[in-house]
Length: 119
Image (cartoon, rainbow, N blue to C red):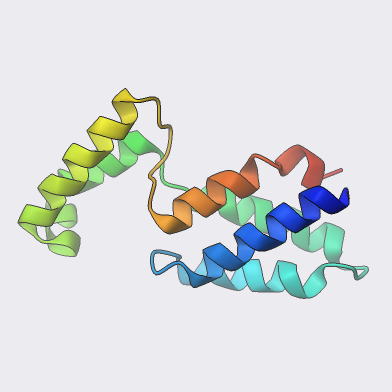
């Protein structure tokens, strides 16, 4: 893997691990990938990591739907859920494909390097 790509993905992986919105599964996959970098397990862990990230990133339309649902109100509280939905609609209008929380932003940056990662 290209050193520049590796440096970007390692940095974004640390951001992901430290993001308060990171799921436990994504955090575990991120750490497993970091632990495997430079070892014989790197290629296999990279595939697992990418698959986990693709499953975890929140598409913007799903975020809007969740924020506007009863579940969103339970998780965020009614007022915050409305704010999240409004924010999501705003960033969607500006071209966003995914949630822009710290975890999703890190995942999106990592997945931008997917082709180089999987070489």
